[in-house]
Amino acid sequence: MLKRSLSWKIAIGFFILALTVLLTLTGCNNLGTTEQPENQTKTADTSDKDGRENSASKPDISAEPKDTMEKATLYFADKDAMYLVPEEREVTAGNKKLEEAVVNELIKGPRKSDVFQTVPKEAKLISLEVVDGIAYVNFNQEFQTKHWGGSAGEAMTLYSITNSLAKLPGIEKVQFLIEGKKEDAVLGHADTTEPLAPNWSMVKE
Image (tube, rainbow, N blue to C red; front, side):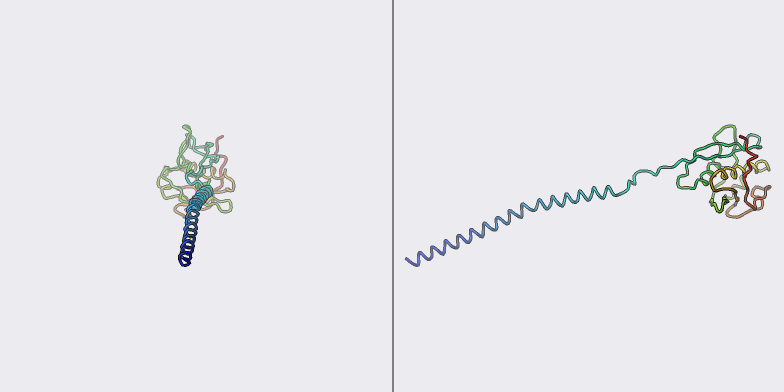
């Protein structure tokens, strides 16, 4: 009888122990299951927040850079090739210097119908540097070879460029170069070994 009672107590003890262990394991599993979505949610929230912050910190590369417009005075020849006629124009410099943009506009030619081209359209500006008030304007060979010639036409070309550039701040004279070299008479008559000063007496207002 004593043995049976002792066996019964041991059995009950094992049952209680097993039940306690089972309940403990079930509670841990439920806790882990409950916490996991919270961790996932927090991770997702952090990712979204970081994504927004990273997006806000990046520059908008889709937008095209805006070109700034600068006012310039260009000089073209009158119908008799005796005087230079001013033409006010808004010039888009873009990624170039303003003085380069002015010369390129002269190459494009006038917009008015009563004035005429002074620089051959085949001419190309290779470079333009301003040093101590002198603009060193470097053209390709076509500036010479495609020019129409004549002393009057030469004067219109040289001084349309010189006067147009001299209207810009910091430029007092213009040195003409062909393929990077000085020439005695770049267009055949006038001495161009030294920088040319603007000739305002040629301008017809």
